[in-house]
Image (cartoon, rainbow, N blue to C red; front, side, top):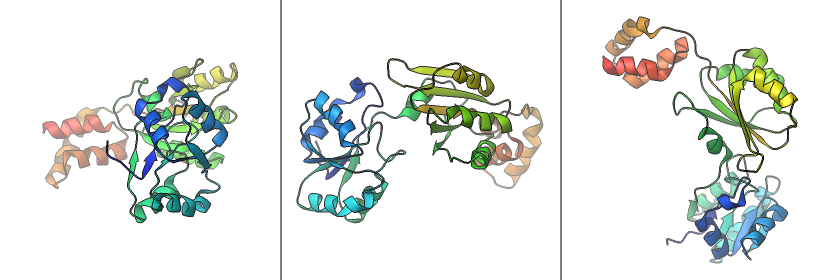
Length: 270
């Protein structure tokens, strides 16, 4: 196995059985583990009899820890980075130290593993593979409305807390009353729930059920009922200007809100 100086190690988002054999191996192998909350990480380590020491590394002390981590690695020791759940750097700390390590020539690798976004998307049917990941939405109503309208013709997915999910969906439903969404909560856990429905129906569902657990939410794109039959001339015109089928699909999709794949098929068949 190739050795690295620094390992980015995903941890389970709920079910401890989802940790990989390689993740356990690496966490036992390294000399020190940087973690968000040592109390959370210690439970995981104890469960798998991992005795590696931990050092706190969270969004409030990222810059303070840089020198300590650099000195540890310069001494020849190996380190791993974990978050409380899921993959580090994906809405979790890590970006600051990874940038520093690369600038200082240390070798870094990341293990594949748990991620709530992919866990939801892998069990929700969509028209194609394209989506936009927002992370955590802004807290102001105007900013949420802006995002909801900006991605009106794109699937977009975000994380939300249980005490804000209803309010957030109500804001989105207000500016996009016919929108459809999928929510996932308690993913991989005993009370996992996936609901796919019109946004207004999901709001009602949540109001009638206890909203515990972190949420992952997908807002499906709004599809204009546009007949592609009238687009052949537009495609032909753009092809005459030297645009590729991919460029044409993007341009017409942005202008008319029609699915890119439908336009691409017309352009590719020409």
